[in-house]
Image (cartoon, rainbow, N blue to C red; front, side, top):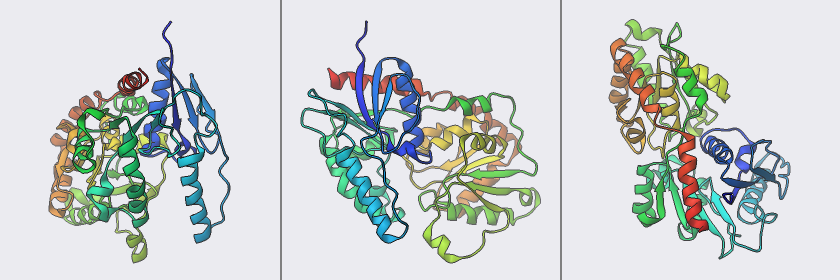
Length: 377
């Protein structure tokens, strides 16, 4: 009988809304747990109710409620760092070495010398484009990541581009890095396999990530508005933007959204599936992505994709999307024109569905388990 590996993770992100890193955590943990080859201890600051085989939840400390306002926010931030760096492993320490996986890219300071650890690095955008990140995030990443770079026995990079950034910007040897792509939630594949996509009438385009500098949303809105104003068939299109991020500069402008543009706020997975499937196109001209899971989700849903020719987006799109210069309004506008051509949209739907079939969480779990085996051995 094969002996199970034992791994510990800090899963407290899953106590909130699930986007980005949370989707990675949720899907990878589910694939690992269902493999039957690993026992997972997931620590959190609140019960998660994951209900997965071979996974136990441990809550070393419940997160307190903090008052609103600057003082409460500061206390919440300090408590979070205390939990992540010191408290999260308090209830799971063992006489032998722990195997720890930092799924969010960070590692606790409380790891012992004999413990083995792997860190998933989702991106180094804060180093490549610091102007896109709030100062407090840059300070936090700058303070915590050097410890990760020194302490991690192995790194999981979510794309080849992220691996190259780790080598170039953090000096991590290539021998310590394994590229492991995200998988795809089968729910999105089921949407795309249901038959030929029938965009909603009137047609809309979809973007995700809220109004965020990194997602390049302000330029996207400008390009879309300019393109729509050219009239003809373009005037029928609207732009829907999901997500809760709101650029402080945009919020401070106080100007209403242009005609034809609407914010959906946070969208649950089941609704996001419907939004993808009904969209005439998915627009993702992000300035920097470590992976770009929405690209794959949209492709699997049978939706033509427009994305950036920067960072990891071309690697993940794999020739199945229209690539644009995210800094050039003319280029984004040209991408909108191309993707709304009927023959091009049909071509992209077929290519996108085929490309999406390359991404499986079971494959990600297998490669991750191999890293665990090497460290445990």
